[in-house]
Image (cartoon, rainbow, N blue to C red; front, side, top):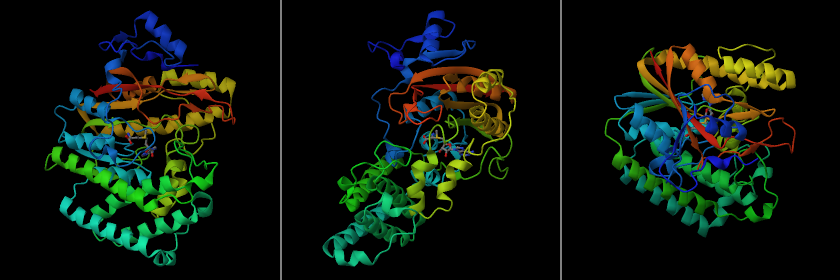
Length: 453
Ligand SMILES: C[S@@+](CC[C@H](N)C(=O)[O-])C[C@H]1O[C@@H](n2cnc3c(N)ncnc32)[C@H](O)[C@@H]1O
C-alpha cells in the first residue's frame, strides 16, 4: 500500500487540513496514518515537509544517525515555542539535532542518551574548538597518513582491537588502516579534538566495513570483494574536512556563552536532580523511539561496530538498555485510553507480541512522568513522534504521547502532521517478526506540543 499521498501535489501554498474535516480524516485512516479522529487540534501542514531543505548545515553534517530529527523541524518548533526559553532538555537526544538548534538560538541545553555513540556525536556537534589548533592536528594527521602511504611496511605492526567477528565485518586492509587511525586518535591529548576525530572515525568505520549501505541492522554486503581495497584514509580525511567546514559555520552563528551538556542517564528510571532539578526546564524538544529496538529502529546495532572500535563497554548490549529492551512477562494497563483499547485488540491477535508493545509503553510512560516533573509551569513539551503498525494495527504514538503528558499536568496545544521526505527510516519492517513479511511503516511524523499547567 502506498502511503505517500499526503504530498502537496502542485507545490501550492501549504494546505492545512483540520482533522475535523471528515474527508481528510477518512483519507488518513485509509492510509493507515490515523487510527482515531477525536483530536480536532490535529492537522496536516505541508509547510512542515521541508522538502529539498539542506539538512546538513552547521554541525548537522557530522554523522548520520537513524531516525534523525531534521534541523528545520527543531528550528521551527523553537521559533514557535522557544521564544523565552533559557534551558532545553532532550531526553532521547540521539545525534543531538535539538541541542545544536538550541545552541544556535542561544538556549542552553541538556541531552541524554543511552547509546555511547549518540552521546559522542551530540557532544562533538555542540562543542566549540579553536580552528587554528584543529588545523594543526589536521595537518599533522595528513603527514601521518602521507608517511604511512609511502612506507606501508610500517603499517603492519598495528593490531586491531579485539572485536567479535572482526574478519566477518572488515577486510584485512580496513582493519589495519582503521587500527592506524585509532592509534593516532588515542595519542591526541586535547579531549575536544579527540572527540572531533572520533566522530569522523566512527563514520569511516561504518563505510569501510562490509555492512550493507543504507541498512541500520548488521547485514553484510553480498559482494565483499568490492570493499576489499577501500580507501580508508581517504574516507577519514574527507569526513574530517567536511566536519571542519560544518564546525566553522556553527561557530560563526552560535552565540558566545551558550552551554550544552550530554549525559547518559535513563529518564525511565530517574532524572538526577543535580543535573535537572524539578521545574527547571523551559522546553523539552525530543524525538523518542517509536517502539523497542528489536522490532523498530535498531540504534544499538547501527552503532555496534563503531562503539566496539571506540572501546565502549557493552557495545552489543545497547538495544537491550533502550526503552522496551527488556521484555515484561505480564499484561498491564496504562494511563491512556487509546493504548488500553489497542492492547485489548492486539492481545486477542497475539498474546506474545502484545508483551513487546506493553514493555515499550511502560518505559515510555515512566519516562514521561519523570520528564514532566522537570518542566516549569507554562513550559512546553514538544515530542516529534511516528506512528507504527503492529499486527496490522496502527499505534497512534502521537495520541498516546498526548494522553501520557495530560496525565502529568499538561494540556494539549496542537499536533501537526508532516510528511517525512528526508528522514532516514526503514520504510518497511516486519511487524509480525516473520522473515519476509513486511508492512509499510511510518511516512508521516507528528509534532505534538503540550504545555504544563
Ligand atoms: C529517534 S532517536 C533520536 C534522534 C535524534 N533526535 C537525532 O536527531 O539524532 C531516539 C534515541 O533514543 C535513545 N533512547 C532509547 N531509549 C532511551 C532511554 N531509555 N534513555 C535515553 N535514550 C534512549 C536511542 O538510543 C536513540 O538515540
